[in-house]
Image 1 (tube, helix red, strand yellow):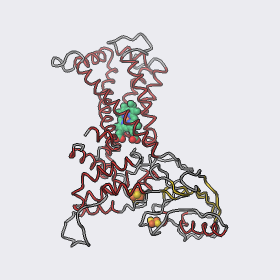
Image 2 (cartoon, helix red, strand yellow; image 1 turned 180 degrees about the vertical axis):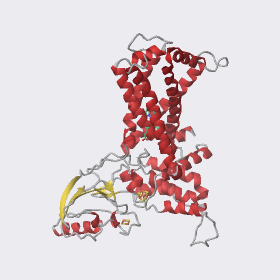
Image 3 (cartoon, helix red, strand yellow; image 1 turned 90 degrees about the horizontal axis):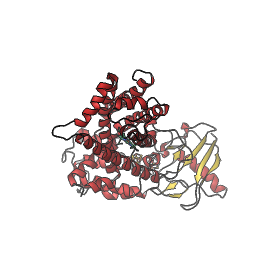
Image 4 (tube, helix red, strand yellow; image 1 turned 135 degrees about the vertical axis):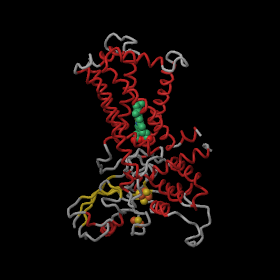
Amino acid sequence: MARTVWDSSVGKKTVMAVSGLIMLLYLVVHMIGNLKIFFGPGEFNHYAHWLRTVGEPFMHYEWTLWLIRVVLVVAVVAHATSAYQLSRRDLRARPDKYVHRKARTSYATRTMRWGGTILALFIVWHLLDLTTGTVHSGGFQPGHPYQNVVDTFSTWYGDVIYIVAMLALGLHIRHGFWSAAQTLGVGDRARDRALKTVANILALLLTAGFLAVPVAVMTGVVS
Amino acid sequence: MKLTLRIWRQRNADADGAMSTYEVDGVSADMSFLEMLDTLNEDLILQGEDPVAFDHDCREGICGACSLVINGDAHGPERTTTCQLHMRSFHDGDTIDIEPWRAAAFPLVKDLVVDRSAFDRIIQAGGYVTAPTGAAPEAHATPVPKPDADFAFEHAECIGCGACVAACPNGAAMLFTSAKINHLNTLPQGAPERETRVLDMVAKMDEEGFGGCTLAGECATACPKGIPLVSITGMNKEWLRATRKAGGR
Ligand code: HEM
Ligand code: SF4
Ligand code: FES
């Protein structure tokens, strides 16, 4: 079964849709969690600590967090690998371009590939910045995410990288959510408008929600 | 009307091709696009030049043989086949670019003619029914609910022209394949091969070197028969169902 799915262009696209939706679900939760920064360092840092203790006493300290991390890594790798392989196949299938070119298809469709690449680079940067602290600007303090976030968004490049990535994310979800519904065979004529609306709302909410944090630091609302 | 045509000329699959410019005069608005090309070819033959090769057969929009990308649009600016496109859609003095279908799975034969036999092989993989159908049966013998009949008929309209592949930025044959699968999988006559049909046709489509779907929607815009984009969604659904049932085979 796994082989049939992975060897087929339709199956690989299914892998892309499912892994994309897993990441999307995570991002909704992540975005809501980030908004706690508006309630001050106490609440934000406490929330970050709680993430490590979820599921206790059944789970040991950080077990749940690591479980989520493993699922996400699998999702990112599966998504990026299938995206890469399908894109290669698509480009090979259309080697000669038309002489008479036309501007076509929506902005979001055309930006899926480079938008995805921006997201991939951003994920690496983001982990090195706020999870491991490797590229962090100030003195990175594990267990003090509030201060770490403020430090990151106090640098111009920290803001630029984040803002560009979140705009790319919005476009990616706008096309991706609706696409995933088609890939998984749940779209139809009656539901098309509703699916597109939900895709737009999700894209807008996530982009706005994530961008609220750097904007708040830039304007001094969070410091 | 007097027109300037820029046409892709290429001797054979291995030769280099290029756009060549021609002038045609005395084009009437009532001519079909192919009749306009016939006029050009008559001139070329009289001048001792090689006429432009292009595919055509019925010239009434039902066989799927005609195939030209006109000013960047498969089958030109109207939602119809090239043979049913009329010169009234153009204006005196226009310059028109004419190119062949472009896709790795449709190798070029000559000028504007490409080899679409990859479609035949997709059909051979599962685009048939094994139930003996004989002559037109008595209408009540096998009841088909009206919505199913309409749905199947809408997809049965596909004439296999390949405009969907030509228009797709990924050279994908998803719309063609999904039209055939939705057509046959919806009807009781197609039920025995419901799972093998979709698995085999999709596998063949991949094997022939067609691209995948990124839901750009260009295929459905180009299709002269109005096969809708959700047709592909329906095929994905059938594929997932068959894969689950077959356990991957
Ligand atoms: C690792 C970085 C990423 C890369 C390289 C990437 C790349 C791609 C590509 C190339 C597509 C196909 C676009 C198309 O078919 O037109 C796609 C689809 C998709 N992506 Fe991503 N993406 C990435 C991250 C994400 C993230 C973080 C999410 C979570 C919101 C996501 C959600 C989706 C969804 C839901 C789809 C639709 C799947 C489908 O068409 O069935 N992607 N991605
Ligand atoms: S789906 Fe439409 S464009 Fe594609 S082969 Fe059939 S009739 Fe032609
Ligand atoms: S020549 Fe038959 S459809 Fe155009």
